[in-house]
Image (cartoon, rainbow, N blue to C red; front, side, top):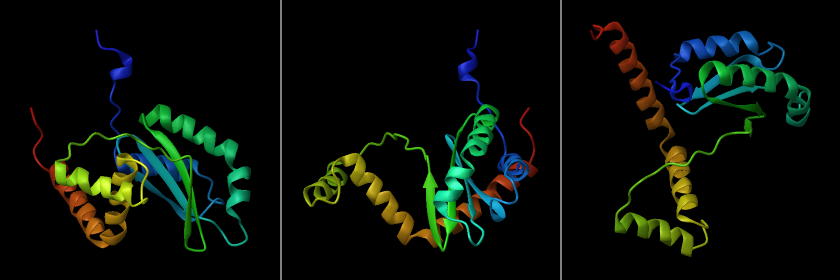
Length: 164
């Protein structure tokens, strides 16, 4: 008999964006909130209106954010994190840090170890995270193009024939 904890909840990006668009008060952000997601986490961010501060927003919306997150986590099977943008700077609240498993060859491990020996990172895990952030920062345009192409692939798949 299958266990309930093994249940996989599949929701489309559109369903998740619609949910947050309906639940997040319009007064919180300038325009619609931005939703980023993967299999473990949903990150909802928005631009604060003029006159708002990050600290004031965080404190005044805490109870409502927790309520929205609790409902969304039960509905979508993913943790919810929040963030705001103010004066071009993004501040994230309660984001998830997920362990990932990877296999690295000697030369790749040596790269991580060099970062540790140079004081850039304290561990291989931290060094690998540093490398990923560096690629994200320097290849942001290419990654955005790649993500856009993947959205098109998903659309074409959805329009195609269904498996029996």
